[in-house]
Structures are given as C-alpha cells and as structure tokens.
Length: 346
Image (cartoon, rainbow, N blue to C red; front, top):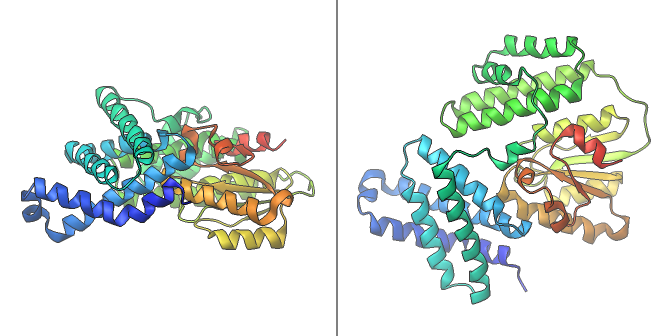
C-alpha cells in the first residue's frame, strides 16, 4: 500500500493545477497582469507546497511544513506580495485533497494545514527566531561583521577577519562552526528579507568555500584511527557547505573520509557504500522537501545492507528544527554542526 507522501506526489501536478485554476478564477485580473507565465509560476509554487508537505509526513511532525510556510510568507512580504495569496493556495489544496483522499488521510493533511495556519498567524503578530537558528553553536563575536563582509562581496576583508581568528588560536572546526556557519545562516536570512540578491548570496557561498579550503590547508591532522566515513547530500539537495565542514572535521580527527558532495542519487550512494564499506554514512538535507528522499535513502541502506549496514548520521538545516527526527527516520544519530558531529560518534 502506498504511503501518504507517495500518494501526494502522485497528485502533485493535478492538485497544483486545480488550486491555480481556482485562484485565477477568483481573481480574473491575474491573467491580464501576469499572463500564462504567471500562471505557470503559480502552479510551480503550489507544487512546491506539496513537496514540503511530504517532508512533514516523512518526519512524522508538521513542523517542517509550518516552518516552510512561515519562511515563504516572510519572503513574499519582503517582496510586497500579499500574504492572502499564500493562504488562498493552501485553502484550495485542502479542498482538492478533501475529494481525493480517504477521510483518515485527509484528516492528517488537514491537521498539518491547520498547524501551518496557526503558526503563520503567530509569526505575523510577532517576529520569531527560526527554529533552525535556535540550536546553532554560540557565534563568534566577529560573526556579524563577517556576514556584512560576505554580503558586500568583500573578499579581502573577509579573508583577513578569518586569518585573525586563526592567529588568535581558533582552529578549522571552531572557525567553521562559530564563524562561517552562523554567517551563512544570516546570509540566507538577508536573502529571505530581500536585502541581498541571489547573486550576492552565491558570491558569499563561493567566498566561504574558498576560505574553507584555505583553513583546511592550515589544519593539523590527528593520527589515523583506521575508520572510514562517507558523507553526501541526498539527491536533490544542492547545498553542500555544511556536509563539507562535517566531512573535514572527521578527516582532521583521523578518519578516512570520502565526501561525495551535492545531489547524490540513491543508487550511486549504495554502490559506493558497497565498494568502500565505511563504518559511518553522513547524510545532509537542507530543505523539508528533501525529507522524503532522506527517508527513502535511509530505507534503501537498511534494505541493501541489513545488519551489516554502516551507522547513519543525519544533519542539515531543516533537521535543526526537529532534533529527534532521526529516530522517526531510523537513522542512528543527528548533529546540527561539525563540532558536535564528532561527539555523536564517540
């Protein structure tokens, strides 16, 4: 029997088309203002709602979806898009699924939508710190300054700031988790608030990648412990800085490490596990829409290797809101940062 997240994905195209049609029927001026391209964009956005909805189902908690809805509302508000459009899209999705799902299935979806509506109302009344920011390591005193340098694309001054931290005795892992990680989360917040462009965000990412390589070249390595660890972003996840920090932390601690980067297909991951036989596999997810892929990836590892499987650690931005998610997904541990990841494996 298909699980509910799979059923939703099967309905994704039709549900998004239904909701878009209803929205445009309720607002005839939209066709004149935005044309067919606007309608296609609307449909794609609503399909994305469904993708994030599957993340809530896979995690066993509505919070990944409610966090996404509150995030999206702030993105739209910063770009002067009426918040009513988001609420209306959820209304029509709920209407569609009421006629397509069993009463029990629809009750589950309605519960998630109701939680999202309540969270959205609360977020609009008072500004709240995103859940994924609440479990960050304490930022270094220069983290805000680094954020400004990165947002401005000031490569030399960002480099000097990090060099100074290193001269003051901070090592790779400390700088990565207490300076670079908080700064990049703040960069994401600035884009969300429409204060920087996508190009500025990408430039900041490139600067950080280069600085990580520089800091890695200065780092001291512990003696080999004879253990192997493999790290990758699940298929669809293109954000690989975090998993790179974690992989580097293990290599510096004496592990043999393979870091397979972003967007790794499940089949390729299973093949590499079989070939290399690591003791630990670390998987990263950045958005709730990737949680169903994470669930399927973990299930595939269990199914392929059984009792001989490696230990599975998960992490990434969207897992920070639910620290116990790893139990639901049948992983072995979770970590919000590179420094704590080491502790989880002891």
